[in-house]
Length: 402
Image 1: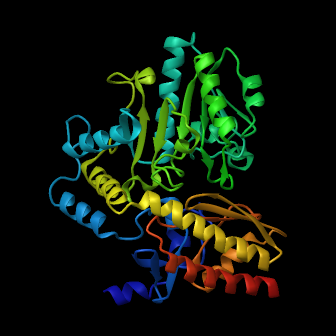
Image 2 (image 1 turned 90 degrees about the vertical axis):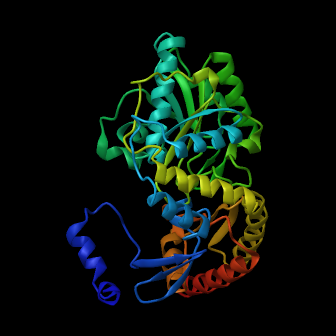
Image 3 (image 1 turned 180 degrees about the horizontal axis):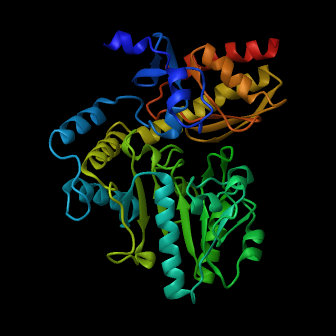
């Protein structure tokens, strides 16, 4: 049966049966282990995309596999009409990591941000004379729902869906004066990423993050940090905002939280802890299966000291990228924090580099034509990086000859 399945034309079947929402690479994966995946032809790849910053423990980590198997045999779903132990245990662990914040669980980053927006609007109704407007950043990305698309500061995500919901505006990232100028009596909060992910791996400045916190305090605004991509230890801190010495009112998490199992989380401090029964909800959010996977992921990150590893390996990978940037004149300026890295690509060659890297067994991701993004698993070793650098070098050599 397995052999028969592997020989099917999966690309043709996808085009026949799946809506045309994704521009995919011409490869179909069937197995993963650690930082490696294998396609239908048995070819092996180093995965520096990690499901877009999802597979923080790599593929099929034994701790997550065991947690999911055991939980699936015990209790998968009961709905939030009842208590479930795994959900409460996960909220407890996140409280310990966030200084006592309380959690709400959903299924994705977009849903987590929707919850944050709703909670901020309730704060505005109660404490800001009905203020409802959220100021987010240019180049930001917060999700694909209508509200989170409106909050996303990239026009190409928005054009098709206009008119978008009211109550969102964007200002340039790292520009505190622009944020202050955009604030009005309608403003209720500021939504931002500590490191912009989909926007191109752009870290915030310390001055900006601390200025946003002070401004929110002075104006009685809600500071919301979208940690969907930068969280879970990826930057060398559990939360990306920890690099800046600030504490937001609301935090959103998803992607790596359950090591590959879908989950989202919206955390709030006491000041904005305003939901009451009926205000918000989710059928699947916080189900025992996803929460068991998340608990295993958090435990493994702590026991294997993967946050510290992300910081060390991020610096080592940066060194390798710097050498390659000196060798090839069409890539430059490696940037990022921890294992959230990017390089600038000239002549619109980023997609070509991704294509050639695929041929050499390395998975990378381009953000537009001018940025190459790398968000590998946090379990990365120096040997993995050496191998990836060799494969990337060969890919870049191919591009240079084109």
